[in-house]
Image 1 (spheres, rainbow, N blue to C red):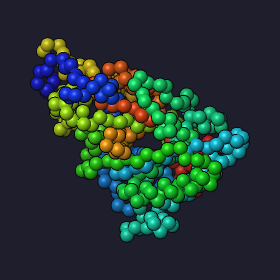
Image 2 (cartoon, one colour):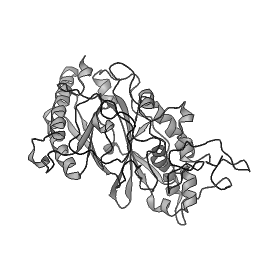
Image 3 (cartoon, helix red, strand yellow):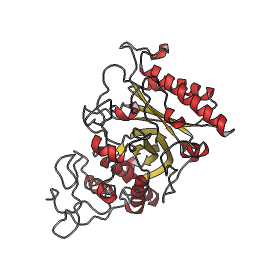
Length: 403
């Protein structure tokens, strides 16, 4: 039964008085930023954290182990600060480039493992003994194809989407490294160490992007810059084994990252009446509940209607267009961050993990066509990466690539 008061089918304004067509076009991207965030969330992670983890939970006391079946940035609660770095590996010969990649992955394994433990670099030695740091390393489609690496079948760049305004200097890359920490100091130091290791293997920096999470109560879902909770419906471990992690075999503890830098027109969106914001999202901004429910984690009822036949969750609502029911139940693991690079350039660093990146393509095509958030969003950068399985003690990231 619907719990919202009866509403006629809404017609969404361009944003607020004075908001032009350009802002209206940006809104479509906003649905992805907030909507997809509302349909996926934190994931319980493998050998580190059985059960269901919660987005925005405080970091555990002490260091977070680097070694494990899965990479720690995917299996530990999200830390409040992140830095993504992309690198290119110049082409020489296939044999030389494969050896350079192997050298770099081994160097990053040593650097990241040391930085996550009792760090040898004095800048990382804290009063409690070690920094709080997690990381993940992924490979880009072009590098995987060039070196004939053992990656999942069909791993490739995303297609172009309507409304994209992508800056090539901010996206793509042969290698992607994400660092997450409890503070920016740790990120700055470890990013320097990782970049030095990359230089030593012949890799060159391509782009870097910093992000953050708001202060969030333990176990609660963090909010994005539109004010909505972002990551409510992340899969639990059972669902993640089906939709996020690779099948049994060499890719079992691997996944694919889809990264999108999404500029959000926060001023225009904030000017909308709260009811219009809720209808665009399909959830209530206050408690995160779907318009058909009473609590954040209630399943949205996409079939609920008002007496006049209008859907309670509108046909253009972000929650409806990103719903798993439209993709055979498929879910993504969302671990997004906000960014604020300039007064007119703030938004969402959409980081979603899935077994099949075709799932993102299907969702984004639906959003680009009719998402009510589109007037408030603009996609400015994009990347795809094959996220390697974790490295057990005594092994290096990517060892399975050479088997």
